[in-house]
Image (tube, rainbow, N blue to C red; front, side, top):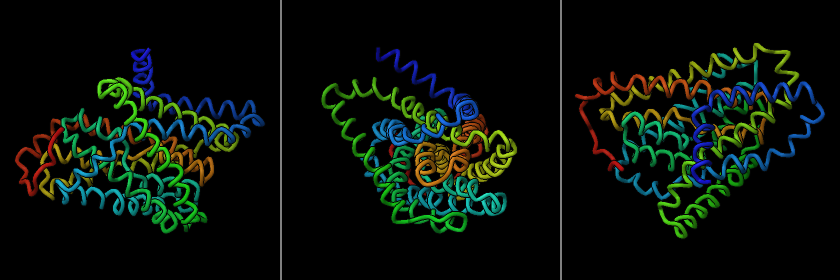
Length: 337
């Protein structure tokens, strides 16, 4: 049973871009064919958000934050990139490309403001980077985002739509912190009852389960906005251009900064993925709760661009290893796990 679930979760995870696109197409088709039923799907969003966020939080290890003190400089710089450079870059691109499309502009700004995702550790491992450092960046950025998202969104996106900062903070506590606490308790219970080996068998299922919730959210949002999307196919081009520019600048600037700062190759990989591997689930959850389906469309298309750039970065690994082989190192690396 567990093996079957692991295989199913792997299929869902590996085919993320394809299934997201399929969710968009099927959602629009459903909304066009059954408009009344599509409007009724909104009542299922709360449950679906929980399905999306709870498994993701169960797989996180917040205690990794304690390791941040081992490399304070590099961790601090990654947080600076995540919560200052990235939101400001997204806001600039939103102004340049989307100032007359408020729903889309908000989606791009939200993309730049959310923390990095758990997948960062996996991609860092594929690229033979510092996985221990990546885990610290993931855990710490999640905690900091609870405060930074309600601060940045009214400042940067408030020029496009009205945002209640206090309401957003309360909702983030409910949307992020509650699943985080429940997920942490679940992980501890599983480990206590079945040990690390038992949790090791459950853990591969969690990303796929979380993504299943994400696909349902995309489906519901597209079904609700089907007529608008069908009559405006140019929306896809309008969204994909600034998203592509955003990720191109985010990845290239993180690599160039790593070179300038003297990071070794392994730390550069964790830094780059930790900056650019944005949390799709949290962004989708906030877009679904606070904004309209057109903002959700931006977040639905985000994985197509983000995963593509993460894969391209992986292909560049041999060349980057040579470039960073003789780089001067100005810090001690985080202990590798």
